[in-house]
Image (cartoon, rainbow, N blue to C red):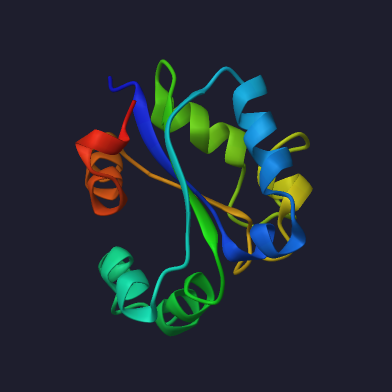
Length: 138
């Protein structure tokens, strides 16, 4: 099991100014931050990242949203990092997310749900490489 995963603090959370609170919660949950940067994706860059969803009806709205403002991309380290990060994030729909999860506390809707996380170790490796070079991981 890998100890690394990938996360994004999405544009809605950055617009609200809660990225610092989210990062603090990540650290409080025992994660180490191995890479972190503030970026503003172009639509094309977001389309490349979410290409797996290209045929889904929400693809256009998703890539428009993810390129609508700055976001924070992160590489997180912890034992069993992928499931641990997904647990901390909570359910995609903030109304269904457990108390104490990031989406319950910071998300406003299914579409603007504050954070993204890799859904598998394989995707974590792909997503990390999409945004970070090996030099940027400490």
